[in-house]
Image 1 (spheres, rainbow, N blue to C red):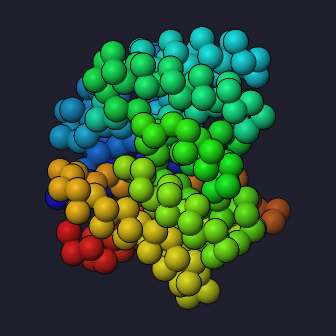
Image 2 (cartoon, rainbow, N blue to C red):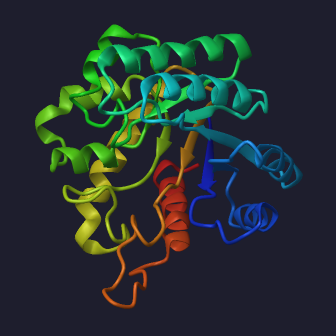
Length: 269
């Protein structure tokens, strides 16, 4: 099984797509994960192709009113799929939509996937239908075709725990997680300040064990590829900053490269 490592464009918005892709390629990544708007998707495809990189595109939908959100979600998925990315990573629905509404969005994604042949995975993320480990269980039980992007850092934050008391919920999610976002969360934030720091060693290992389980499942299933996006987020916001100066406490770029190299060594790939 091949293991492909992706770098997010997120955090490199000051660079052109071309410069970002060259930097990503030089750092030893296999591809990029990009939230490209309609006017940037052609460029994303061309630039990644020119630099020998795989491409994951992201979808979000939009609009607080469900009817508007539903239409935009459907239209965006169709448009993104036309660019034939490796797959689409979708931020699907909202935590305040009803189960029936979010299910309708998931069914739209399933329909677009069947129509276009482009896989659509649903990221576990705060604010979405998948915002917590307990909240997603009914969806997993009722929609067996549902496939996930595993970003369990959000669940750690929402639960204010490392999910020790809900191992069954995590196990059920691992069984349908086909892509990994290797961000390390902690009970009071979706991202530790620096996973290289000794104080976060246990947090890193907790998440790595979940990623190991996803990899083991795919190996046993003879899957051809495991994909991993090293998606620690930038400052301000995800990456903590010092008061008054707003200086990041660490380098987002260096952390993501560390995560890539850490998993390469851990898995010997």
